[in-house]
Amino acid sequence: MASKRLQFVNGEIYHVFNRGVEKRNIFQQIADYFRFIFCLYELNDKNFVLMRDRIKRRKERKNRGSTPANSTDKREPLVEIIAFCLMPNHFHLVLRQLVEGGTSLFMKKLADSYVGYFNQKYNRKNMGSIFQGRFKAVHIATEEQFINLICYIFTNPTELLEKNWMEVGVKNPKEVMKHLEAYSWSSFPDCIGKSNFPSVTKRIFLLKVFQGPENLEKFVEGWILYKAEMKKGLEKIKTLILE
Image (tube, rainbow, N blue to C red; front, side, top):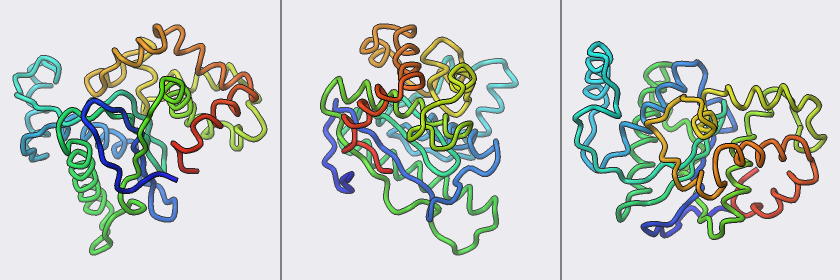
């Protein structure tokens, strides 16, 4: 079971995740996914962030043909976002803390901003948070855990094509891999060289551990092709995930 009051340490890596109250969807439209990912980038800043100003500046940059990567914003990141995957009713983040208290502050800013957006958009007056309590976080202690956790996170969208695939195996591996490689709400496409949201994540460490995008793709494909390999991997990270 994940600890709710983990003491975060600078330089260490954590699996951070949460889901909707009663497993309800926290992303109901494509715009919701875009907003959450926008928050991942913009709120990862030690400085105070007013989202309406960031949205306005983003539109101005777009009109000028510039991108966040070449903007003049002075940023002080709280965390390094190594990987992410958003599913209809939950999300997964792999974060490395950069500054003292950075993970907790980042997650508070993220939750407050997205919940405010969601409640206003869907007219949820006085309804409170859409999340199932405070975020959950688990320390990733070994390289083996890291590798299997990344495979677990990046294969999550498989369930949108094939329900219960972890129990019964994948029926159409080729179709599933095409789906994962094109799944916009994950950093997997960026990791294998298909530009998606490249400004959000820092992928150098991940690709170093997997020894390149080709090997990462092979590891992920291994979880899809071989049920026994996936089960073995899940056993190694059973304390890092909440099912």
